[in-house]
Image (tube, rainbow, N blue to C red; front, side, top):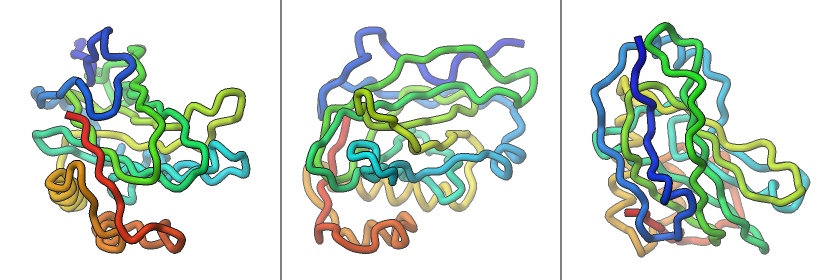
Length: 211
């Protein structure tokens, strides 16, 4: 039994300027799959960066639970935190179906990458278009010839748990500040990032919203 891909992108939306024309996603009917096993076994890491190379050393965090598995609400909103750098680079987001979860799982589908412009330290919120099955979400900076690992890696699912609800509410609150700023310490607390954001951060973080 075949199912529709998790995300659909317009071919004209491969490269998108910040704050402009990002395709909005709408919630599609849920597909039955083994999400319980996925939540306990997915080897993702919501925190990317940290290598010694200048570009890929820059912190990059998916705003998802610590498990790196996240079920968005009906708005299908996701978010990113970018850390400090003297030389910002464009950011690439890739989404691919998570294989090995039974006969209902779409596999072998190559989805278009999404590129975001180079940005300073801050938060970026993005609304996706459709969610019908688990998808691995991977984000990394475009560093040219430099190795871009480790990327931030999470998986998006549809079965909502209490940890997902907390993140959903925190993302919704962030969207109220689009174009403005939020208090860094409160943001770190809301997303359990105090261990990641220990020092050197500005008191306020800008919030950039696509759509």
